[in-house]
Each structure stands twice: as C-alpha cells, then as structure tokens.
Length: 461
Image (cartoon, rainbow, N blue to C red):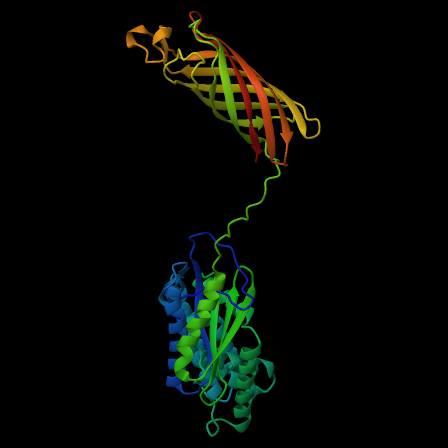
C-alpha cells in the first residue's frame, strides 16, 4: 500500500547532501512489509508507520510531500492507461480460468502477460492488493507445472510484501504449496531484516512518483508484543541506500518509531549552516594596506608678518594599493588643529583638512624600506583671526583691531620621503616628512609651503 505522502532523509552514516538553500526535495514514503497476517492489523500497522513519517515531514518546510493521488493522476495521463488495465484484466481472468481447468502452461502464459502489462502501466503501485492475487495464481501455476522453482519463490515473496494478509493455509492448498509459501515468507523476512530493497523497484518508484528519494518503512515482530521498525532511504541520483532501525515494545508505538526515524533521516539530510571561518592572522600578502599616523605641520609662508611659525597637530588615515613590490598608488586624509603662535597674535584655533592622492616608489632592504611619494594635495583651512594690536593681546584683543583671513580650496603638489620598518608580516612602523607647494589660487595665495612630520603604523591585509 502506497503512502499518501513523500518524505526525504537519511540517517545511519549521516551522509550530508548539498542542496539549494530553499529547494524542496521530493521523497516517496512507502510502507513495505509488515510481519502480520491479520488484515486489519496489517492496515493499522501501515497506517501508523505512514502517519508517523508524514506528520514529521509536514512540519519541515525543506521537504515537499507528494500524495498518492498525484501519482495516480500522473499514471492516468498516459492515453493507453485504461486500455492497458482492461487488457491485463482480461489476461488475468483467462489465466486464472486455465489454472482452475488444470492447464498450468496456459495459465502461466496468460498470467505472465497480465503481470507484464500491469507493471508497465504502474497498476501494481496503486493497487498492490489486487495485483498480489494475480501473483498468487501465477506462482501456483509454476508450482503445478513444476519446472521452475526460482520464479514461484520470487512471485510469492513479492505477493507477501505487497499483501502480508494474503495467506496460503493448510486445508485449502496441498501441503507442499503451504510449505513453499512459508519458506518464501521466511526468506522475505530475512531479506527485510538483513538486506536493502531491490534497486530496480526503488528506481521505478522514483520515476513514477517523480521523487528524488524513496523511503521504505517495514516492521518485523521481535517478540509477542515487540516490533522492530526498519527504514531504508534510497537516493535515486546516487543509486544508494541508507538504513536505520528502532525497536519498540508495543504495537501502539509504531507511529512514534516511524516519526523518530524520519526525524533522524530528515535532520541528517539537511545541509548544516556554514560555520564562521576562524580568524587567522594576516600574513601581509594582500596588495591593500591601511595607514594611521600622527602629523605635525607648520606653514612657512603666512600672510601676517607678526605671526611667527606655529604648529598644527592632528592625525591622518590612508590606503595604499601595491601594483608591484616597488610601485603603489595611495590616498590619504589629514585633519589638523592649530596651536597658538608664540606671541599669541592668533586669537582662536582653526582646523585644516588636507587630502592627498598619488603614487609612491619604494625599495626594501630587509625589514627597512625607504619610500618617496609624489602626491596631489587639496586642502581647506578655517578662518584665521589675527590680533593687530600687540598691547591688547594679554587682556583680550579688541574685535575692531583684528584681521580675518578666509580661505577656499588650495591645490598643490606634495613630496613625501619616508622610511618604514617591518615589525610583523602585516605590521610596519612609519616615519617621514613632507612638503607642499600650492599652485591654486593662481594669485594671492595667503598661506603656502606647509611642512609636515609624520609617524604611525601601516597594516597590510
């Protein structure tokens, strides 16, 4: 009896299969052999096994259940499906009649035709109990003829797997037939307990159900009340089975056992989230590096002759890309805050922002590397307020006696020699100096010739 749903999973060795992040795998669940001869108990056991697996798969959005009805509809899409069923039924009826007329050779010919046509149509997958009756008469016909022992054994094993409640009882059949049936049933039970399902049958189920994975669920009795639930998962793409078992103490526990096994299978089939990569120390192999350094600068050319040289202090951050070992391109931003001049003519602090971009040449002598950079500079200064009356500086400059210098963008060239010392594969200490000359504005440049001293570190990724 086919399951109403499809499940997907694998446990046992827990072999992971990569899948798309949101792809849903279709897996067909089919309840196989149940070691029970009572028709009602067989139906209850199969229903419990299928319900346990189905409820579990419904709770997981990564899997797509496929109903038995959809398989039937797919088979019925074949234009010759109904005609094939009618033809096979005619052959089956003819074969059963010949068996009852004690014509085993004619019965075998007709019944083999019926079985072949029904298999090709997939009818055995949707109506296994009715199909098993045809298998019974075909097996009996082979036994009656007595020329082939392997074929009736194969037929009876398939009959019992499809319909465990179809029993050959003593009194209705000859003793030899009953013994043959009991031997076939024991052989099937050993096969279920120790071996995987037939691969050709699993491939056929995968094609008919359009499923990537097939889950077989069987149940064998271990004691008068105990059961062993056995599952096999077949991966149609890989052509491989995975197996897992679980023993339970009561018939009522079959559903829970199937659910637990399905949970193992499904959880193991899920692709785990990628663990974050461990943080490794950089070996300085990247062409990219970042620089942070302290800067102290002073303008040699200042508009007010009363103001002596005074400093600006601040910090800079830059990035460097090495095209070759000797040649690189770079950029940096520097922010400086003014310090008061010695005589105090500058009565308020102002900020200078400088941007650089250009090329750099360098050569390494072991851990020491001299470098020189040719850069283009764009800078802007805050307003500079200078007191013109030296006598009022101490007590506070009269606002009427001040001069305000306002600046727009200054453009110029910068030359920067520097020396670096490699401390670690990725970390370097820097010390250097630079000088700039502004060429824009073209006239009336009120400040010029900034000279800067720098020291800091460089980190290469």
